[in-house]
Image 1: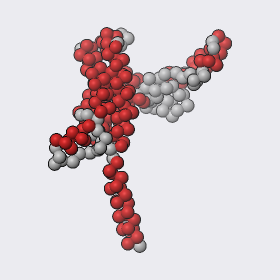
Image 2: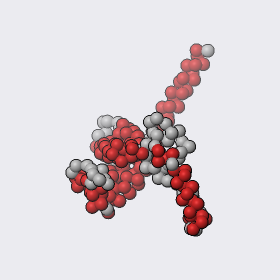
Image 3: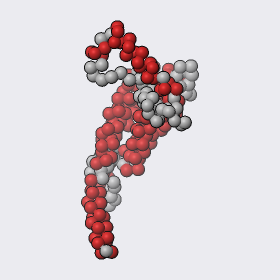
Image 4: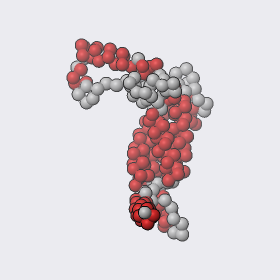
Length: 212
């Protein structure tokens, strides 16, 4: 019996070792998923920079942050340049740090008051809990029903819903938290073995060191 267990364990370890040769694929997929999102966010900030500065600095209808020009510039650069570097797998660990900070700022200054959900769903346990309770979500069904009723009576409802049903944006931390987790993973794993410029540059110039 012990010999069987040892054989199974050896087979398992051998399989894991072979599978580790492909451990660069998950970081690659993370980067390919996240890079376009960051680049688009950074580009939007760049093309609307004055509005972003006003939103960062205004305490009445914005975030009320100090040094809004500097912070808007840093956020724009982190997302736009960082997204490009993520796509290439270049300086992956380094660029993950300002992006992690950006996500944390977004979570705590913008999204957290709205709870977890990005899209309002009153049936979700994440909307009706002690931690993530949000009254606006609980009222979303009533508002959505009213909006659909008005559109059915006065609008081109079938045309408007041909691509999908209407939803109410809740703007919770769901997306920002997901991006944060991915970036934290990339901080520890790097861009990926065989799948990033980081790997090939280090292989070329630091051949005595292996990297993942």
